[in-house]
Length: 173
Ligand SMILES: [Zn+2]
Image (cartoon, rainbow, N blue to C red; front, top):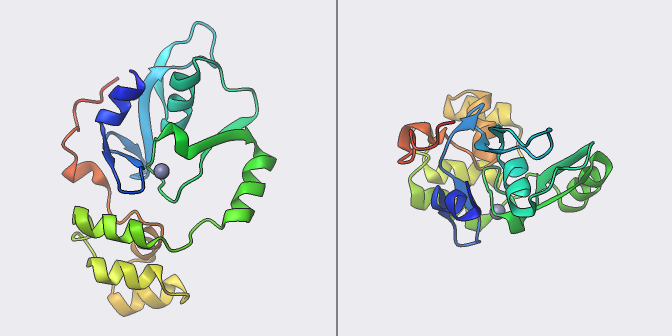
């Protein structure tokens, strides 16, 4: 697995995010099969997507206690330039500085383009949720959907990509 292989399995957004089309854990977090340099012998195994990309890009083990975290608003983004690494304290500083779930109009547009929201909510409803300060419970009641659906809409991850994933089956261990 090279960075090009990873990119080939992603949808490239206008902001340059590489949105992973392969396997996700919890319907959310990219899973990538790649050498794990952080273990003796660099065994090939399924890892969190960003950890895998970091290790592919550097060819090095991730220092103990470090986390690899995204610096854009896309949870499924595997662009090596949209991630950073460091201690948990560094991750905390970054999160506080940037705010995690702020509204991102380009991302809403990307969602709409992908038609990803049809399953439960319209793109307009998702946009309204993302631009609203009202609690998720209010939106859940208003739209008659689960709170989880609202929170996924808010985080820009409306539905699992599994059903619409053209690469399903290609990314096998
Ligand atoms: Zn990104």
